[in-house]
Length: 166
Length: 419
Image (cartoon, rainbow over all chains, first blue to last red; front, top):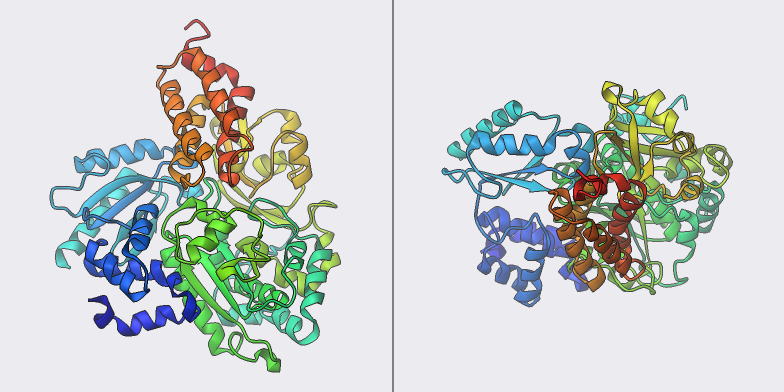
C-alpha cells in the first residue's frame, strides 16, 4: 500500500498544495503509483482516490487523458521517438522505422523479452537535435538527442543490460 | 546584440550554479524590487518596458498583472513551463542552462502580484529538468532568497515545481490551471479570466518561462533601456527557435524586429545543400504558413509586421521548409499532431481535427480526389471561430494556408494536374 510504504513522501507532496485543495496532488501520486507497480493498476487508482478523498472515476479519467500515465503493462523501457513535423524534416520517421526494424518489432509492440517498447510520440521540445527520443521507465524520463539508428541501438543495449540486473 | 540578456548561459559558463549567478548580479533585481519598490511600482515598470507575453499571445505582461482583482487573497503566480508547440524549445534552454534568472523572474512577478506561492508547471517530459529545478529552488531557500520575510521585509514567497503528465493542451493557461488542480487539462470558459478566478479560484497570473526571464534585467537596467531594444511596439529581445531545413538549427536571441533573412542566412547559415526556401512557419505547428518570397524574408519579425504579411509571430518558433516539402504532407503532419492533442471538450475541435486527419491521410497517400481538398477546406472553415480555445484555430491555420498558398502541392497529390 502506498499510504503505509511512502507516508513521508506523500506528506511532502501534499505540503505543496493548500490543505483544502489536495486534489492537486493527484498527478504526483499517480507517478508514485506507476513507479511502485510498473503501471497504474485499478487498485492503485482506488488507493490514490482514497488518499485524496476523490471518487476513483475522477482519478481513472486522468490516466486515460495524460500520455505519460499507463494503465497497462508493456515494455520496461519505452522508447518514445518524436516524429512530429520538425523532427520528420530531419529524418525522424525513417529513423523510427529503422529502430523498429533493428529490434524486429512494430510500433507499440514490446520486444519478446518485454524489455523494450518503441512508440511514435508528439513533440518533445528537442526539434533542433532530431532525430531524438525519450526513454520512459518507472523511475523517470530521460532524453537522447542527435541520434541515429546505430547510437539508438547502443542506448537500447545498455537499457537491456540494466533491466536484466534490476 | 553583443551580450545575451536571456540566454546569458551562452556568455557566462556555469551560470546555472547559484554562486556564479550571484557573482554576476543575480537576485539584485529581486532584492531591489522588494526593498525599494511597491508591487504597483513593479507593475508600472513592466508596463513601461513594453514586455509582451512570450508564450504566443503577445499580451502586455504588466497590463495582464494589473487585471488582478483588488484586495482578494491569496493570489498565485504560475509559470507556464509546458513548452509543447512543435518547433519550440527555448524555455527548455532557459530552464536547463539559466534557471536562476527564470526563478528570479518568478519571484519578481510574485512580488508584483502580491502572491506568496508560485508554481512552476513543467510538462511531464521535462522530468529530469524538473528535478534539477527543485534542487535549484532548494539552494535559494538555503541562501535566504526564498522563504519567509525576505530581505528583512514582510514579504514571503514559496516556489513549487509541479510536473504535468503529457498533454499539449496544458500550455493553454486555463487548461494548465485545471491540470494543476488535479483535473483533466481542458480549457475553461472565459470570463472569468485567471486574474479574477485562476488557480483554486483565486486571482492568478500565468506567464511563460521566457516572459518571466525578462524581468530581472528590466528591474536592474530600467524600462527605458528595455524599450530601446526591438521595435516601438514589440520591445525587447526574443528567443527565436529555428528548426527544419536550416544549416544551424537552434535558439537565437535577437531583438524583436530582426528580419527573417538576417536570422536564417546571417545567423543560421541558410538552407542546406543550396536548396531554396519554399515556406516558413513562424509560430511552430500553429502557424499561418508564409511563402519563402523576398517580401517575406525581408519582413521584420515582430508582432505587428507578421500580421501584415498574413501570419502571426506566436512563440517565434520558425520551422523552415525547403523546396522538397509537399504541403499536403505537411498539413497531414500538423493535423496528426492537433488531432492527437485535441482535449475533446468542444465538438468543433474534437470532430474537426478527426475529419481533417482522415481526409489528409487520403490526400497524403494519393488516394483522394480533387473534391476532397474542397471538403477539407469546408471542414476547416466549419471550425473557424467556433472552438473553446485557440487549439482549434491553431489546427486549421496550417491547413487553410497550405491549401491557399501552396495549391499545386495538393493538385500533385490528387491528380488534378493530369499526372
